[in-house]
Amino acid sequence: MVNMNTKRKSKRVNDVILQTAAVIIFFIIIIFSINLFFSGHYSPGGGFVGGLMTAAALVLLLLAFDSKTLATVLPFDYRKMTAFGLFIAILTALHSVLWDRPFLTHAYDKFDLPLLGEETLHTAIAFDLGVYLVVIGVTMTIIQTIGESE
Image 1 (spheres, one colour):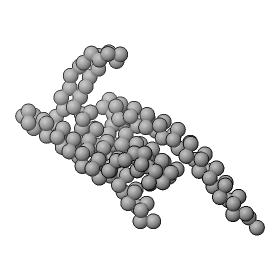
Image 2 (cartoon, rainbow, N blue to C red):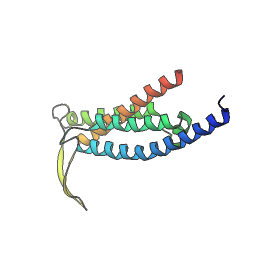
Image 3 (cartoon, rainbow, N blue to C red):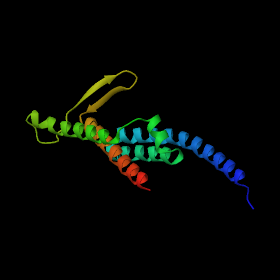
């Protein structure tokens, strides 16, 4: 017969290993998602893929810990995040109409930034930020809703 105290102790050890690995992997995934977000204008990536990677990192924390711990550490209302991201994306899209340009026409200019040198900044980054926030908000809302019902 298996001792119940032995099962509980091994469960806690497994949780510690999972939680420690999850925190380290979380930061690696976040850095990769930020890289995908910024490289999306010139190569595959952007707000959608970066948002999915960030949501995957948050889901990893959700699996390693629980929803209350995640809500304590990262107190975001994902529905408000979705609305704010949609607001940013719509404003960026309508910005061109206000300047009498075709819908979703983006502006850009070159800037000499310290440490980075000459960089091109686009209004498409603001649109991608809106998409990024919408994807994170919708994904996390769906996952938390599914998790609460089980």
